Amino acid sequence: MREDCKLEQFQNKEYIRLETVKRNGQVVPTPVWFVVEDGTLFVRSYANSGKVKRMRNNPHVRVTPSDSVGKPHGDTIEGTAIRANGDVEIKISQQLYRKYGLMKMSFDLWGALKQLDWAVFAIKI
Image (cartoon, rainbow, N blue to C red; front, top):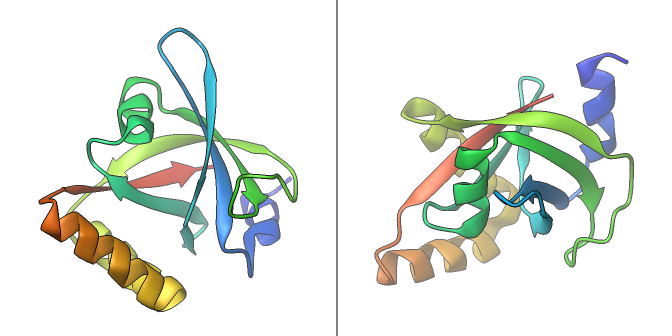
């Protein structure tokens, strides 16, 4: 199956279930916001979050369209998470603002008050 066909199921969805793997092999599913750009899924989270640490340690991830609590609503696909930076981070952050609006702004305000850094990951399918 072509990569762009695999990503069609994510159109008009708000959440994906991102499955990352701990060092002990335990799979941790987390519902996250995302955007699709140029055939790649992008997610953004606090740089010190568990999912970011797990993606740095083991870039193999699985993603599934889901609801806000992580209940799957589609097919699971495997991918590789790669840390994005520079202009890509800025571009993805802007797209997340357009997609999620005030909800996204409130998360960013909370993060700024707590002086938290962000990390953007590209998930290559």
